[in-house]
Length: 488
Image (tube, rainbow, N blue to C red; front, side):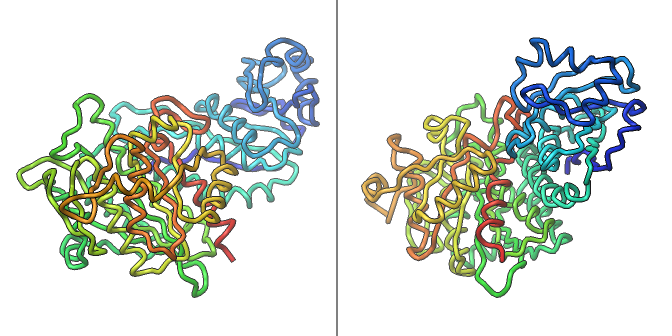
C-alpha cells in the first residue's frame, strides 16, 4: 500500500526557531495577527513577515492557503511558509491548509510552528491525504516526501486525535490504491487476496468462491463474470467491535474491469474501467479504517468481485438469469452489470446478517455524471432517517452528496415480457431506474441507501484533498456515519 507521510507532534520551543532546518511554517490570521511563534520569526527575519502581510500577496491568499518565502534572512530554514489561518478555523479549512502544505512538503519536510493551534490533527490529515502519490508501477524512483512536524504547546492532545484520523487516512489510501490499480494487477483473485490480508487487523474474512455462490443461487452475480477467465467471488469482512447487536452492512460493486461484455463499450476511454470496482474499494477501505481505530460497532462489509468480458461463454443480451432472491431478470444490456452483482450481494447480506441498516456503493451509471458531474455522489434511499444521517456525515467530512428520488412510477420502465424484470429501463432517468432495480432486492424492513459514485470515485483533475485519479470518496463519510450513529 502507498505509505502515508510521517507526521509528528512535538513541544514548541521558541529558542529553537532560528536553527530549524528544512522548511519552517507559521500561522497568520486573516487580519494579520501573529501568534507567539510568528512574532519570534518576524523578529528573527528583520520584519520579513510584517512586510509580506502588508502586501498584496497576503491579501490575495484565501483562508487555508499558503505562501512561500525562499532563503529567509535570519533563519537556517531553506524557506519560510506563511499559512493564512484564523484561530477558530473549521475542520474543512484546517484540512485545506494541510493540503496547501502538502504541495510544498518536498524532501526536507515542513515544521509548522503554531503553539496555540486548535485541532492541529486536521491540518495533518489534510496534508497526509493530499500528499498521496500512486507510483507503485513506475520504474523510475519517485522523490520521497519529508515529514510534517507540528510544534504545539500541548502536542499530546493532537497526537491522540491524530491516531483516529491516521486510521481513516490509511483506509482512504487503500481505497485509492485499489481503484488506481490496473486490471491486470488487481484481478478478482488478487483483490480477494488483499482482503484476506486484513485478517491481521482483527477482521473476520471469508471468501466465497463460485461453487458456493452457485449453491446459494447467485445466478445474477455469476452471469456477469462467466465470460472471463478470472473467477468470481464474494468477500465478507466482519468487524465485531460492538456488543450483541445486529451489524450495519456495507455492500460494494467490485467489477475489476468492465468491457461491457457482449454489449461492448466504445474503445475510447475504456481503459478508465479499471475503476469500476470503486464501490468495493470504498467498502474495503472503510473496513480497514474501522479495524485500525477499533471502532465500537458491529459492521459487515460485503463485496462482489467479478470481471465483465466478452467471450463464447459470456451472457448474451436477451438471456434470462435467476437471482438468489428467486426473481428472474432479462438481461437487455450486459453493460448494466453492476446492478446484477449487487442484487445478489444485497440479498445475501440481509438473509445472513439481518442488518440494522445497509448502504451499497457502486460506480453504477454514466447518467449520474450527467446529473451531478464530479462534485456529488447520487444518494437514493428507502428511509429518510438513514438518508439524513448519511448526508450529514458526508457534509461534515466535506464529501459531496445529493439525494435523488425513488418512486414506483419508474418501475414500469423495468417491465419485461419474459421475466420478472429487465436490467435496464432505457435512457430516461437512468440513475433512478438503476436504483429502482436495486430496491427490488432490499427488504421493506431494511433501512437502505444506494450511493452511485460513478462521478466521484475517480477524477481527471485534482480535488481539494486528492490528486487526479482515485479519490477514496466515501471512506470518510461512512466512517463518520458509523462513529456518530452506531458506536456505543
